[in-house]
Image: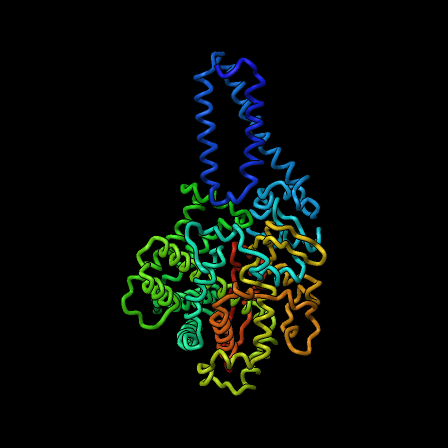
Length: 550
C-alpha cells in the first residue's frame, strides 16, 4: 500500500509540481527538449499508474479515484504555479497586453491559426501601444528604436525562434555569435564584387526568359505568381546550387509547392517555437509530414550539389563546400548539418522573399499606371534604350532614383519576412523610450507593422514611392526602415536580390504596359495573404500589353 492517508499522495504530487516549476522549468531553455519532456511526462504518468495499482490494497474504484486525484493535483499545481508566477511575479508583469498572453503562448497560436500574425500584432499595437507583452517572457516592440537595437549583437542575441530547423543550423539560424561570425566569413566570399559580376549575367538570362514567356504566351491574362516564382526559383537554383533550367523544366513547381506546404505549419506555430518543435515530433500528422518533406527536399538539393563534379559556373555552395574540404570536414556529420541548414536558408531566402516582393511590386504597378510611366521615362532619361538594358549593372541601377524609391516603398509595406525573427536581451538589458526591458526577455520587432506605424511615416497605409525621394517629408523616423537587417546580421544577399528586383521590373516596364484584367480588382493579393515566416501573397493575374501595340 502506498499510504493509508488519502492526503499524503496528492500533497506529495503538488509539492513535486511546485518543485518542477521553480527548480526545473523556470531555469534555462526547454524548447528543443519539448518532445523529450512530453514523452517523459507521458511515460511517468503510465509508470506511476502501474506502480500505484500494484501497491494499492484498496478497491479498484478507490484506487482509481485516489490516483486521478493525485495526478490532477500535480498537473493543476504545476500549471497554477506557472500561471500565478507569470501574471503576478514575472519581471514583465507591468507591461500591457492581453491577459491570456501573459499566461501562455497557446493564446497567440490560436489567434494566428489562419496565418495572420501580422494582423493580430497590428490590432495589439493599436490597443496597447508601442510595447506589448505578447507572451509570458516576450515583448513586441513597435517603437522606431526597436529595429535598430535588435540588430546589435552586444545588446541582444538570437532567440529560440532560430532553433525551428533544429538539428540543422546555418548562417541564418545559428545562435552562437562566434559560430555565426566564423560562418559569415566563408559566405562573404560568395558575395564579392567579382562574384556579383558573374551572378548578374545569369540573372539577366532568367529575366529574359520571363520576358520571352510573356511575349510568347497565347493567353491574354498571365498567371503572374507562376512566372515570378519560377524566375525566383530558377535564379536561386543556379546561383545557390549551380543547376540551370530549361523551358520544359518544371522542378520549380515541385519546389514552390514543397516549400509553401512545409511552411504552412509555421503560420500559427512560428510565435511559439517550443510548440512547433513538439508538433514536429508527431511525424504522422500531415502538416508535420509536409514540414519534413520540405527539410528533406533541402537536404536533397545539397546532396545533388555535393555530387556535382564540374559545375558550369561558380555558385554560393561552392564556397561552403570548398571551406569544408579545406578543413577536412566535408564528410563529418556536423558539417553536413551546416550544409543542409545553409541549403534551407538559400532556398527560402533566395527565392521566396524575392518572389513575394516582386508580386507586390507588379501589383502596385498595375494598380497605378503612372508609376509605370515614371519608371519607363526614368530608364529613357538615363539613355538606357532597349538594346542596352541587358548591359545594365548593379551600379547602373543605383542611378534610377524613382525605381529605387518604388522598391523601398514595396519593402516598407510588404516586407518578405512580415513578423519573423526575435531576440533575447543580454545582461545589460534594453532601455527604449524610458522603458526598461530586463535581461533574458524575448523581444520582437515586426517589420510589417513598423512599415504601417503612423509615428514612423505620414500617410503610413498609402503606397507613396515619392516618400523616398530627397524632397519628401513623408518619413518621420528613418530608424523604422531596415529591410535588410543590419550589422553582423545584415542580409548578405542584398545586392543579388536588388539586382533581381531592379532588372526584372525595368525590363518588363520597358517592354509592356501592365494592367489588371477586366473585372479583377486584384484584391485577392492582400485578401489571401499569409504570414508563414515568409510572406505568401494571394493570386495575381495581370495583362501585359507590348508597348507600341496599345
